[in-house]
Length: 334
Image (cartoon, rainbow, N blue to C red; front, side, top):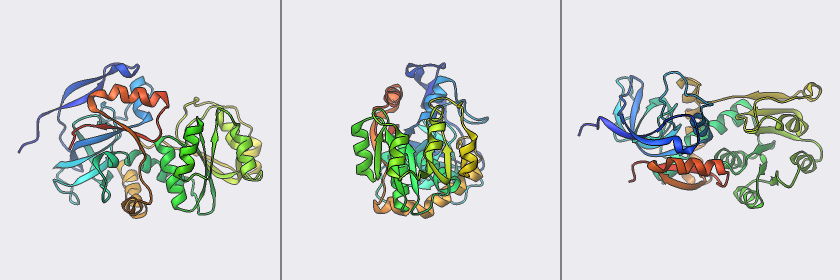
């Protein structure tokens, strides 16, 4: 049966609030040589989608203007140079855009098999957060067993993934979160300590937890005024990885502690990296993390699902910060 020539998709009609997300009809894309076309079962909702909708995070050149950076579904068409996937394969994929649609293109090398026992909804919660966490905590920050990790935003999709992965590889994990309930859930997920940033100063809390030694690695999505506070929390030779700037991209800092404690401050964004870089992460995840997912040792934490046509409601929930874990769009219910 030939693939349909048109599809339902969510487009951003103008920069603005969630109400600018509208259901539309688009031509079904065709895969290039190294791509596959996926019939999307579910798609993850992420902060970069919100930023794109607001007009402050445009898609990279050549990427779809349709939001959505991760999908799960079934391969229904192959580019002419794709050899390791076949039509009918069930996969999840990290994509540069286009996820909020019935059909989505993906680089074949950025597709991963759906872990044993996983639903499409669960699988759609994996790519963006697991690629991001692995790349930044384990590759860039070189977190080792026995070290301490501080994760800001422990209740987010990134945070809940970071807690589980770091614990699975025998690190000690501290998190910040915005309510007593969220802190409690982070502890239940395996965090060694959770700090309510509304009622506690996380710098004082971290120094107390570490006997004034500080932590070895910090994963930060906040930026702005958090940077000088993060530096105070860092142990000798510690590494800070910046992956978002919810409090803004600028900060005043004292360079002396960076010199005296030999600190490393780095950062990254994933979306604009090339397929070869992302494919290398995919290989590492398949080897190191997919077995843990298959055994249930770790799992994606999903707060709620919405239909594709309710994408605006999903964005409203994300911006409310009331969720714990991932938000998913169900596109083609199975």
